Length: 117
Image (cartoon, rainbow, N blue to C red; front, side, top):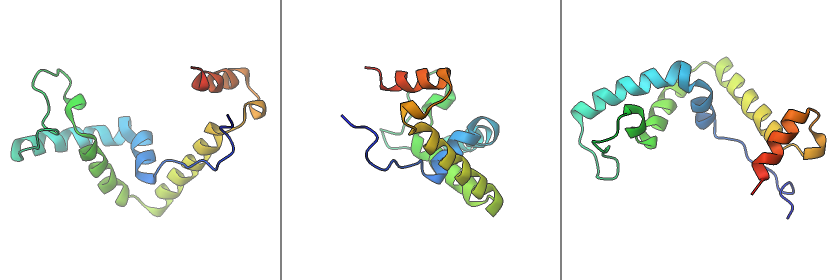
């Protein structure tokens, strides 16, 4: 099986921003907005959080998190968006390197463990 033949895609810009900025920027905003949303809206059964879960963050629907991330991302400056694109491209290149091209042993072992069954 040849896993490196096709061109690989990188994360969408909003997904990458969410991953890069979750702890520092997005998490507090999402938690605050979720608390406001919970008080004012009703939810479909699939989005309604279970009552017995201890972590508030685990109950927040992914669609809600991505909606907030998109709103914040749309408000970023052009320079910040370019930095996110640069990191996305760097991550894509790093993730899809061929094993013989990886110089450091630790990185090579980590890459091999990704493909381990």
